[in-house]
Image (cartoon, rainbow, N blue to C red):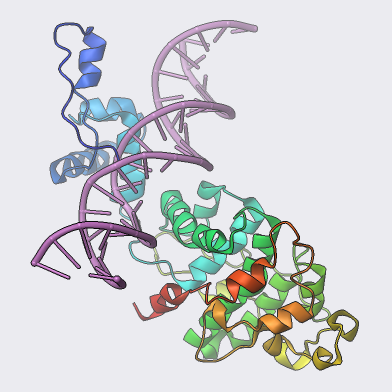
Length: 304
DNA sequence: AAAGCGGCCAACCGCAAGCAC
DNA sequence: TGTGCTTGCGGTTGGCCGCTT
């Protein structure tokens, strides 16, 4: 944030335009400014931001007013932490669209592009930094899809077991069969004949109802039990020890442990996920196994 | 108790697209 | 068609605050 510095005194050398610009306020908004802006928009509506700023008596740029309104003052803005469902949606949509924050935000009612962008930078990119890989790299995408998202799904399931236990499994399976998943892991996770699924298909965008996206919105109904039917093909394991490994074993899922540290790296190694990383080393082995992917903050959100 | 550190997030910036004239 | 203005978007900054040492 730029400091709310008093305007530089250019009285003796400035043009009228410069004088006008020098009077513009920057930095944090005051309650009075917020009130002015809110009341003006309530009466006259949004748009024409430069004119709006002047007519409302605000010494701000139109851009500043627009940003303040859209990111903070708008009545339907949803405050507070992102739910696991919302996080899941963000991860999925980002994997599709990349840094198209406004587009992603359109599918999260009440959430702003700024908020989603901040979430991505502070939470998601942090994980990438800790793993010493590029957050926009394919490998990070793979890791998110195969190790982070299943955890979120699991959390969603636990939060509302009656409504989503089976459907979330199908969501997880869908995620794991995306083309971006490494072939080894795709084999690990693949279950035959998944239903076609779009996480957006059933999503409500009713702004008036600011409740978060439900599990049902995200996940279609499906009754396949992933741990029952999912196996790592023996030809990929390289060892009979893992010749009959289920997905649960692959993730080493512990019902009391939602963090990425719960992942069985031995199993991941067994399916060849570490391979082909000569320049960056055994990134998953050396970094993720070192108690990284601490997603505790995310898991705590449900209790808030 | 104080200093250091890191995370969060509001608000800024530059750029580009859209539009009116 | 060119120009200028407005709007929207994505990237970046830096103050605040809580936690750790």
